Image 1 (tube, one colour):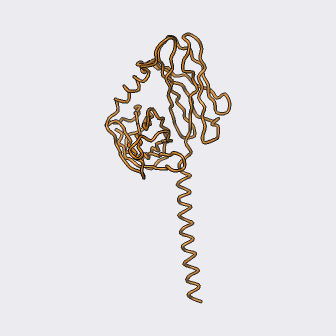
Image 2 (cartoon, rainbow, N blue to C red):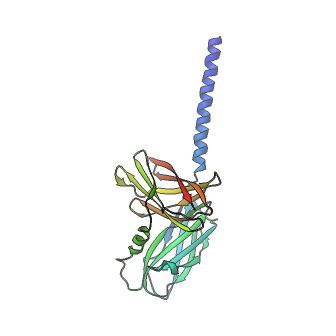
Image 3 (cartoon, rainbow, N blue to C red):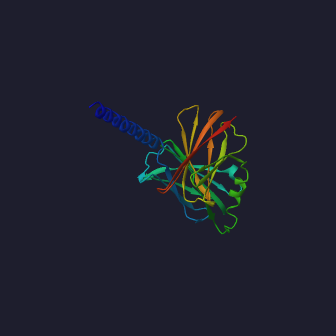
Length: 254
């Protein structure tokens, strides 16, 4: 009888431990919010001097995001980002936010949407042709901006996935900082993944930053650190049902 009672108690403890483990894993999964997807809907060619309609569709999973905190379009002519203009977008319907803008002269323009919603931030960007110009040099500005980044801060492997987080050598609070993540799987660029950064300071409420794929296997975003200190940046990578990886990096902000 005592032996049977011992077996029952031991079984209960094992089941209890498994239950707590499953609850812990479930809680951890719930703490990572589903990524906010923003898709720009802008014609590839536009006319000079005519009002153009700009739109971005925002979703979280299959749900249309109708309660975004802020949606703006940043517009600049190639090579003149310092002269960019911000245009506020308004919700139209079913997660679609729109704004109108008139391009004053022909050229290659960049249009970047700044979306803040549900504690996440994402900034997809496209290039458009305005008037009669060629688009062969449209990627020049991106290359220029990319070359301004310094060496990577963290290089980690999750399974077969290599995750390289890159940031400038010197990061200052209250200044816009370019961050990028390079992904490889089996020695080849990992494309079409969902990549987001979980950024926290001193165990406070994390900020979530969604990255956009700017070239094969390279995902980028800008972020402004509010205060100086040592931040923990967790890079989350998802693709399909097979890839769910994350790595942690420390980044010092002056």
